Image 1 (cartoon, rainbow, N blue to C red):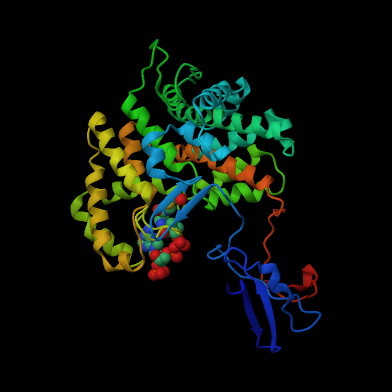
Image 2 (image 1 turned 90 degrees about the vertical axis):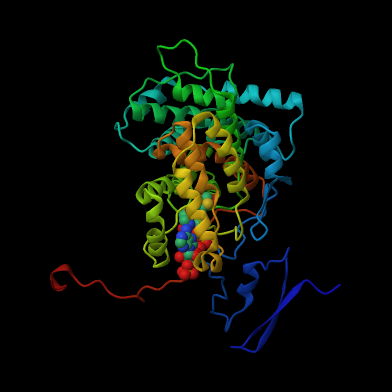
Length: 431
Ligand code: CMC
């Protein structure tokens, strides 16, 4: 068996170092011993966007980006999306195993119990301007929850941690729905405990006060539930990294989740689903596609919903979404944007520019088209992503707190500024 080490020769000093390999990685702290003299700080790693740096060990999600594989706790995403509900998957992601029937019943009951928000949360949300972006409302209201539950700061107490996780899972759809209702000027709808997680969300979104009952369409409710499953976790993406980074300072989970929501909002991350619709609207007609693709290839903008840091193959979630879209369209009628999206995909998958860079449709390419068919406006799309991803953030936060190797996240930098210089008095600095 060959030794699991790397031998590094420092050509500046001709010294040789043996560095252990750990699960295929070197610990970059092992590089610090490589110095030219005693005053030297030692060698560091430089990796501005974490292109080749693992920030943690995690047992939650496995991705093989070249093969297009995604598994939660070892289970293929295709099987989970086909056979499970979102809360079943949430239990799996949080606890490591799929629940038994009675475990699931208890978990559903516990989450359902926490769906209501304090009346002052509604008043807080009333303060937003009528056209406030729903992601801004979700992020701020999530941060505000920290003030309603100050005991959430006891992050070392497992019982408190569990309670906050249940609260966050229960309340996220309520706040999301209220953000939506607020933007439409509609009164908030209280949660209905007799409905499933996703049906209850639909009821809070679309129940009209004048109607005594709201009956969610089961096909649409299932489609939304599947979309939540597909978004539930995705290992160390930008928002999860934000959750872990803020969580590493021992901030409470509401503050960390608010930070994660902020990261998700960006158009290169979860905000891409909204931007795909903006893009499809801009393209407008099939005949405009070639000119649009030519612009993308000329560096004048991106094909939103394409490309991924990890997937260099078809995103397995995009495949499932495409199938789910067909089921939704049987109920809602076909979204005409689908034709433009499919044509874009066809051209992109056969074009040298995209092939060379391994750019395939990602989860956001088709999700917006379904969301729109379900009746959502584009500004709420990323909020839907956040509802699904909530459990992933929480599971990763929980894993971080249990990881003895983790400390406050604090990257190093390469300083490129001035060396010391003296302050010139104001009246001598010239114009
Ligand atoms: N359209 C056109 N060109 C692209 C695209 C795109 N969507 N994505 C990447 N490229 C090009 C990029 O310009 C670069 O070309 P070159 O080598 O000539 O400079 C090359 O492909 C490599 O791209 P990169 O930006 O270095 O790759 P990255 O890993 O840093 O970025 C990404 C990944 C997802 C941010 C990027 O592909 C992108 O901006 N995609 C569009 C936004 C999007 O759909 N985001 C959702 C991601 S999936 C959901 C989620 O997890 O958030």
